Image (cartoon, rainbow, N blue to C red; front, top):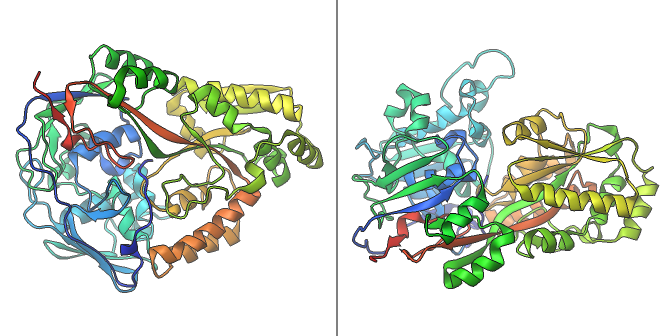
Length: 526
């Protein structure tokens, strides 16, 4: 999924508290709506999606308890404060007087109901696992049989504006996780028909849905009539125009048929920068690409073999050829925006060295059979860089029998989760919230797609999670990262840079790695 960030001194104290509101800029007179290019979301229920496309819409419809500002610092949004004296029992004070788009009050119960729905196994929601460290989660997610409960015992509504959360153990990252969309509230109206709600979500943010979600065509939102928070919409509304191709969306941006494109194709970046001038924005992102190995296939059991693959791949050459140099070759499992990032954490194992790669490859006994490379058909650049990887493996390691397994986007992740891949595969991570825990535990921990198991790594993640403060956790997460890099069950490739373009109609475009900030955008009178 998808956000990014840096460390914060506010998390370094034993009694952690975030306080105060972020002051919004004065509301400009509403003028008209503007359009945003979007790929079709999978869901619009916040607890049931990790898609960045969904998040763009959800960010406009909902206020999270905490948000990440442009400097990467956590700030309060729907919450007044998030405090704890032991990192295990947290008290969330919710700002009073807020309402959902249908006029229903936003209360502590609204958050508890939403979190319970996401954690309830029969619902089958994507973000279920984010609630696994709340007491009572296991009763909602038994290994066999039906759940014994439908609410978590670790959620206690103290009063309409106070939610007490008891975790299974100390977790210094907890306040930062609240910036993720899985933790937003839902109104009582949602629970009468969750399937219907997914098509027409009601949130507590600056915009509300305007008409039906027209699948594969458009989603319209308008300024919320009930919103009293810190980020009132400065336009009348937004039209999300849904595109199957980023190239088509870029063509429409050039022709003024769409106002904002957050993902300019890398091949068009140079032209866009020339044509758009200061209306072209390039910002560091929290998204990473990796090449994963199926360790449940014994042909990939050797760490030397996996390191040989890593050293045989020229990351910079691929970034220059496929992405016009817009992405950054990586030698870390974390994106540069993440607290605890180290530029050269991987060391020589991520340095292009064909001779050393061949030596390790031979030392590991080489590779037998067909090498299948897995990726989805969601973006043409995936096949482009996989082709480059295949050519380099042929040239540098002597593997001649290489085939592509290009799967439909809808089938790709289920294939990886079911461990049906029998070769290296494209893996991608879009940051949910700014913490190394978000990368390391969810991708390398229990249930990972590689089938990798390492008790020392798991123990270090637990120690880091239980550290007395956010800052104190970082060296421990780095120790865990060192273990993962040494065994190389999945090798880092490059970090994405977000390339954005917008039309001359728009003003105050303030996109950050953490939010599109659609509420801040104004439409100029022509």
